[in-house]
Amino acid sequence: MSDKLSPVEYIKTKSDGLRGTLKESIDLDNHTGNVRPDDETLVKFHGMYVQDDRDRRAERALKKLDKLYSFMIRLRIPGGEITADQWLATHEISEKYGTGTLKITTRQTVQLHGLLKHQLRPTIQSFDKAKLDSIAACGDVNRNVIASSHPQLSPLHKEIHNYADKISKLLLPKTQSYYDVFIDGEKIYERSSEADPLYEDRYLPRKFKIAIAIPPSNDVDLFTNDLGLIAIIENNQLKGFNIVVGGGLGTTHGNRKYLSKIRKC
Image (cartoon, rainbow, N blue to C red; front, side, top):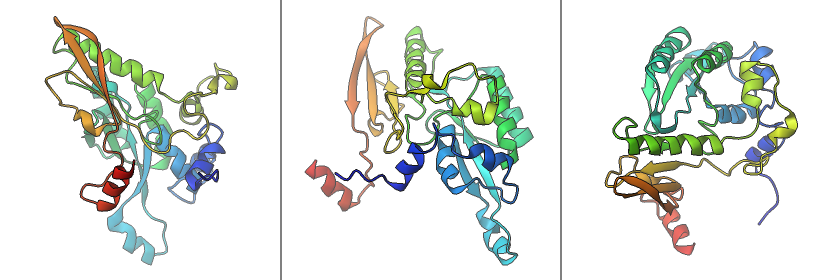
């Protein structure tokens, strides 16, 4: 196995805990609506993707203009559980800073599109006031933990949703860069507390997904996740979990190249 870092791993290891030059990209680079090349990788770990208006590419290229960049923000909502006040706040934030359209994803969370670079910080700060965040909603980390719907169906469902929240919190990166870059709150922590025995400085090779199901329902499509927890229920009480691992193994359906690799494992 080669010890040489891939380009993405190199970006992560030299990023100072996923900070990179994101502050400079947002505050100083007024000549573009994008962030710097390395920061395009890092911004994913904070729950964002860089996008641009495809329909305007040719027109803007003819005019020697930069692409019309915007950002998508995806929230971290374990089990998809959100209060009425948080839902209303999300709508208001989308109307104020985004396109006014919210997209509910297959992983029980919400995405906002069409945010301009200068709107990222006020958007994240508004979510923070609503006790919502987008930490690790994208990137090479554990993604949004999903669970059988919905928490008010029974005390058992509520217990399962609590597990989704606990797992999500346990698997968050230790770095406080999200708050440094986007919240600008008081530094109430020591940088030494950012030591991350789970992710270290390379984080994961790719995204990782976890789901929790309550039999007989498989509404979370358990076997497509990297790690699946199947609740063991006796006398309407949770006794533990059966665990399945592997997910899709990064395969592309019907592609023989991937099938041959799996057979060799």
